[in-house]
Length: 114
Length: 113
Image (cartoon, rainbow over all chains, first blue to last red; front, side, top):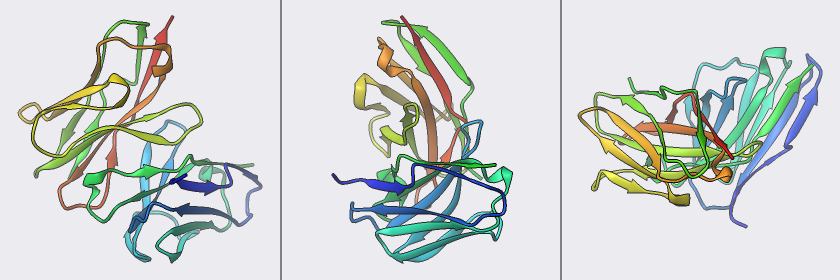
């Protein structure tokens, strides 16, 4: 199936730990994104990459570091997890930098920090 | 700067009744507009989009939306809802040539049997 796939789907971890979320798309898209959805369902962009290059880096703590080994993958590493990091993280991709084709989203990773 | 306002956080409606979910945007340049649906514990799925041309856009699952430039609106409608339409609906906007999609805060549609 062509899709954007994220792993893991659920992640429960203690404060202070370091964790990673992986994302892969097999749609042949050039651009990938990370969005954070908070407890009120608000979606906010965190990062976007185009052909492995960082394009957008919104105001997120330095503890969040995206890594794109190739244009089909965009992983998110989080250091020193805090309670406020609990959210659902969505990976997405689009054909190119122009958003007019819309984004294809993964099914999300629900991160719970305890 | 662009922004999106979804005026209703929750919309309950009886099965087979019509529904309209409201979306207003602000931008100083031309925009592309989207509606996404999020079913429980799932990712976002594109319902429809407006890029240019006809202001009435038809999407999947019987939904349609109308772009109104003078009112800066892009309301989503369905003439007869089903139980399976219960979900969160997000309006989103991007300025033409931009590479960032801004989302509204979502509208929870609950279809009552």
